[in-house]
Amino acid sequence: MFLLDDLLMAPFKGIIFLAEKINEVIEKETSDEGSIKERLMALQLKFELDEISEEEYDEREDELLKLLGNIREEKQNK
Image (cartoon, rainbow, N blue to C red; front, top):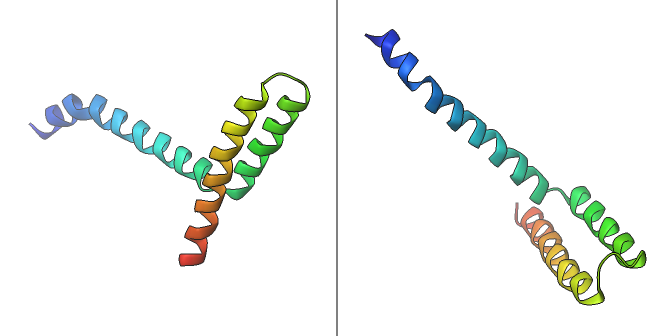
């Protein structure tokens, strides 16, 4: 009986495992200062190469700087 339950639940357990791993990667990406700084540099390069407009640059830069500020604030509160 338990073997049958395990076989029926295996796909769901796999999906849950994948969702947890994706969540870990997202949290790491959004809580790593180095990653945010790299994204800021890439954004600046795109702007300098005229791949994005000044408005789009300003908007994305503000988002990344807020995220960076939140990360630093969170580290100080620990």
